[in-house]
Amino acid sequence: MFIKRSLESIIKEVSSTFPVLLLTGPRQVGKTTLLEYVSSNERNYISLDDPLARRLAIEEPQLFLQKYEPPVIIDEIQYAPELLPYIKMHVDKHKKMGDFWLTGSQMFHMMKGVSESLAGRVGILPMQGLSLSELQVSTNEPYTTDIDRLMKRIGKSKKLGLNEVYKLIHKGSMPALHATNQSIERYYASYVDTYIRRDIKDLTQVADEMQFQRFLTACAARTSQMVNYSELAKDVGISSPTAKNWLSILVTSGIVVLIEPYFNNALKRIVKAPNMYFMDTGLCAYLTRWTTSESLEVSAMSGAFFETFVVSEIIKSYLNAGRRPPIFYYRDSDQKEIDLIIEENGLLQPIEIKKSGQPKSNSGRHFKILDKTGKEHSKGNIICMCDDLVPINKENWAVPVWLI
Image (cartoon, rainbow, N blue to C red; front, side, top):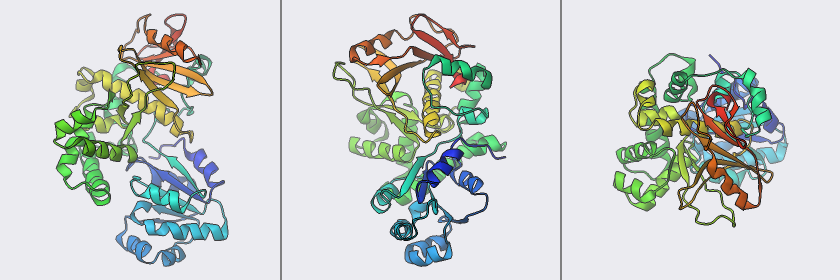
C-alpha cells in the first residue's frame, strides 16, 4: 500500500530548478519508493546496494554513467562517492534540469563530497518517516501558532484519543509498519542491526558495535532531555569526545535531532546545551524496551515520548514543505523553560507541550520572558491531549495534538 507523501510536489519543484536532486534521510523512510512513484517509470533506476553496480560505479564511473543514462535514479549514492565528479561533468556539459535523482540513507562522508563536487548544482531535501498529516491524508502545513490557521484545520483533521495517540507513538513513523501488518519488535530489531552493521560500521570509525548500540539505547532513554556528554559517556563507558562524535553520527544520519537554545543578548543566564529528540518514537520505544503502547502510556517516560512525538511532527511539517525548521527552545538557570520557540520574520511563537487533557490556566506563564527580547511574539500554544482548540487564558490557547 502506497501512502501519498507531502514531499511529492517539492521533489517536482526542485527537480525543475536543479540538475541534481539529493533525497537524504534515515533508512526505510520511503525515499526510493517516493522517487520511483514520482518518476512514473520514466527514469532508469539503479541501486548501489547491488555489489556489481557498486563496483562499476567505483572502478569505472564514466562507464557507469554510459550504462545508466540520465534521467536516472541512483540509490544509496554514499557507497560510490567516486561518481560525484563525473555527475558534475555531465551536468556542466548538458545543463539539463532533473537529470539525476540521488538518495542517501546517511550523510557522514557523502555530504562533504556533494558540497565539494556539486555546489550550486544540487537541491538537497531531507526526508523523515510518515507524518500525522500524511497518515490522516490531510494537507501538510509548516506548523505555526496562528489560531486562524489552526481553526481551519479542525474540520480536516481526525480527532485522536489517548490510546490512539500512544499506539501511533509506539508504532513509530516507518512506512513499512503502516503499510503491512508485521511485528513492531522484529521490525525495529532488524532495523537497528542493519543500521549499525551497514551504515555505522562500514562508513564510520566505530569499532565496537555492541558499545555503539548501548550508546544508542542511552540516547533513547534521554529523549526530550538536555544533552550531557559526560553522563552519556559514563553510562556507556566511553570518553566524552567519543560520546560527542557518536551523537553527531546519530544527528547526521537523521536518527536524532538537536534543538539549540534560543539566543538573545537581552536574555541572561541561558542554559546553552541543546535538547535531544529521537525523530522516530517507535525506534525510541524499541530501544527503551516498551513492548506495548499501554505500558508506555502509563510509564515514567510517557511525558517524554509525548513531547518527542510533538517535536518530531513539527519538524516534519517543515521538512515536508521543503524548508528547514526554524525552531529553538529556552531554559535558564532559574528553571524557566519554553519547550519550543518558532522564529520567523522577526516573530517569536512560543509552544509548551503537556500530556494533559486540561492544561492549567497558568500554562505558558514563562512565555512572558520573550517580552525582554524586544521582538514581537504571538499568542502561545499549549499542545496537549485536549478535545478541542480552546483558549486557556487571554494570551494562550490549548491545541489538541491531532491538529499538528
